[in-house]
Length: 357
Ligand SMILES: *[C@@H]1O[C@H](CO)[C@@H](O)[C@H](O)[C@H]1NC(C)=O
Ligand SMILES: *[C@@H]1O[C@H](CO)[C@@H](O)[C@H](O)[C@H]1NC(C)=O
Ligand SMILES: *[C@@H]1O[C@H](CO)[C@@H](O)[C@H](O)[C@H]1NC(C)=O
Ligand SMILES: *[C@@H]1O[C@H](CO)[C@@H](O)[C@H](O)[C@H]1NC(C)=O
Ligand SMILES: *[C@@H]1O[C@H](CO)[C@@H](O)[C@H](O)[C@H]1NC(C)=O
Ligand SMILES: *[C@@H]1O[C@H](CO)[C@@H](O)[C@H](O)[C@H]1NC(C)=O
Image (cartoon, rainbow, N blue to C red; front, side):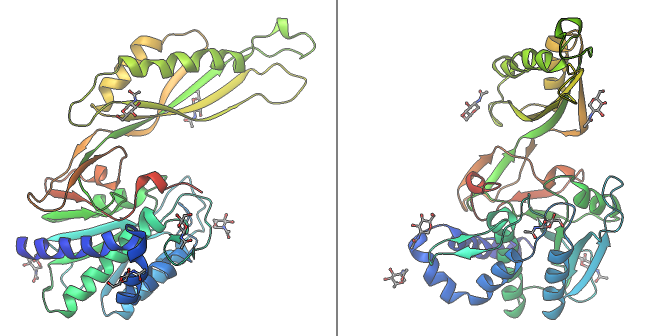
């Protein structure tokens, strides 16, 4: 299998590197691989924002079935989402052996808003072109070509395309929770510019809530304005980055203000304001949370808590002597894998242009 893996990954990388990298080559590559580009384009046409992945799941599972693979659809339930939206992980393999040694994986959802694909002869545009439908296209075509070449046997490689990665992490969590066996290798496709990722940071979402006292807005001096309090607090929190420890492998820990809301109506002093701050951590999440709570945890009228589960930084496996390596600043579904196996992270496109308009 190791040899299969070694021959599979360069193939996927060659295809993936070609997909979005050197502009003048894209036209040529698209002629060499019409199937690759057509699959990529058709996936971009599916509106699959996190939580509403049905069109993409139906398209991709249909495509894989048409290619003769066995396709399982695993329902993913999330109590905070609309109960009537069908959400499923796709798990596909050759024949009947579903306990593969290598799982090739990426996610079917994209960040909102979805917009349709377009191109200008050298570049492909569209929500998810990088993140991560380019990686799915490369993986699927690499898989099918290796299968046609007779290199793959049943039980070698399974494909896993999960929902919810961009927002909830619920697809991969559901899959990992359902595992009754241990794959030897997992390879996740995310925009790494075709570098082998050596590791990525963890993440904490922080809920900052300011509670004030309401009063009529004609007499603001009788109230305590929660918006002003949170405006005063947030720079203090963000300034803590300079005190965070630097990890020589994973790099620094950042804080980013993600959203802010507050107040109710115009004739009332705002008695409530909320912000979400995201931290990408280069050291264990608990270490950063401890610094935050000890430094700014007891500011009057300000309440901080964590939203959801935090994740720790992760080190990835690489194949020595192969493609160049790089550390990635963002988190991926690999964080959900608590099993002890070899984990690779590699895909097409750059995070620099992911999630952008
Ligand atoms: C395509 O390939 C040819 C021959 O290798 C090369 O001359 C040309 O610059 C390439 N690019 C495009 C966009 O045609
Ligand atoms: C994409 O799907 C989402 C969720 O169903 C929907 O809210 C949005 O309007 C759709 N976007 C377009 C352009 O159709
Ligand atoms: C396609 O668009 C990209 C991004 O705007 C640009 O860099 C590139 O030069 C364009 N290619 C052509 C042939 O216009
Ligand atoms: C399925 O594949 C795995 C990994 O290649 C192998 O260990 C296992 O024996 C296979 N199971 C069956 C029933 O063939
Ligand atoms: C943030 O904290 C406040 C106060 O504890 C709570 O009411 C609110 O539901 C929390 N929001 C989230 C998104 O966790
Ligand atoms: C973290 O590191 C990046 C990359 O070296 C740098 O651009 C950024 O300014 C640093 N941020 C902090 C808060 O140190």
